[in-house]
Image 1 (cartoon, rainbow, N blue to C red):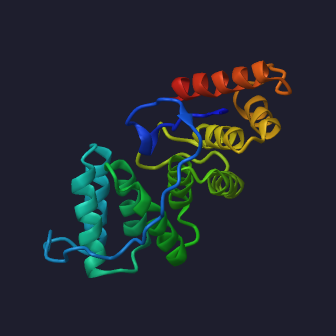
Image 2: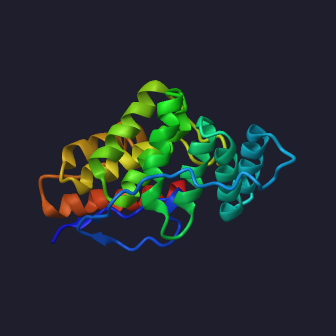
Length: 213
């Protein structure tokens, strides 16, 4: 069985063992089940800001609570849905709920670029390689030089790495190789028409993952 590229950083800082085969998970819905009684002295938008403060401090459960609380008071806050998606992605066993939250954020505001990025990373981690490529390409086209506002070490290079790894996992070694040399390491060389060359490509993806984070 052909090895696949590992899960990367952001949502998936839970280990980096090589995956064999693709994952098959059902993407659940993202319900608006917040408790509006929490943080009642803040407006919904201020509660979203508090959620992001918790997120930036690594307090993802508290962040989720604030985002859901804001949504319980105003379900049309795009950034609250976005934040909920990111927080869910950081919590154990909640990742499959994140894509629906990003979709809701973008339904409200199509320029919520961080939601596209979050969706790309979630899709990759879930094992939906084609969606990961499409979402990453969309964000890079619409927002060249993208950097995640609330985790600044996460940027366009991570999206390119998602694209390269996803193409590899799809068996499109030419596109994976092209992404590496065009955007991440122009000095890399491998004969991807051979099994040995494909393993070299996989090793380079892993090396770049470690370098980036």
